[in-house]
Image (cartoon, rainbow, N blue to C red):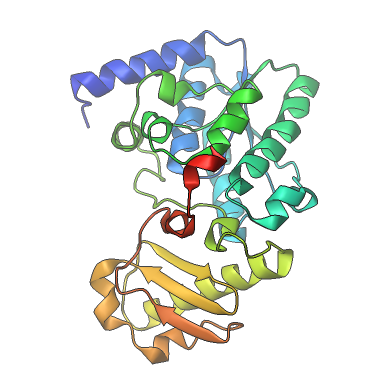
Length: 279
């Protein structure tokens, strides 16, 4: 695949930025954005000057951790899996609109000492140019306050550019759907806890398996925890095909409903009366 010139120019800027760093620790969530930063760092610096770090906590689905390990191994980079403890932060547990700030603060407060221990000055995240203008992203502010590097955003690379680069480089996560942390499924104001996170993960795993058994291929799927009830969001074209018998596999909630509008990234922000006050 040949990159269009504008994307090629942005990729060149990405490589130049990363190449200017003596070494870099990449906050690697397992998604395509941080995966491209990691791959680009290897291309610019060599695998021996790059470290991937995947934070492990109750909010990380087990499948994502496994996939992150495989991807890092494929690039030949050192892969660290430090534990983070978001649940020790009151603002995170309270699940206000500032939850993502607390989460990213915990991540950076864990990765920065790790980087120092490894003799690495720069910690990079997968924030892209679209994220910067997306509006309600308190986690970006938390990372910026902790001096995180954002090579994708600095190079002007949008989500489409990131996927184009990933395809051109033959990365296995090029078309991977967005996979936000499990806490993002819990409605603001409903306290975050390890059992709630596990309940959401189990529900999504069970529903994906049930859909596959029914011959339905799903890309985007979320089980939103609204307290005593669950709201299922999935690909809009599948909504008419999902009946009560499939929803019955979602356990642990008093009621389970299917959102007729289908999957919408960031839909939980719709429940915030005034997102701007959490920025």
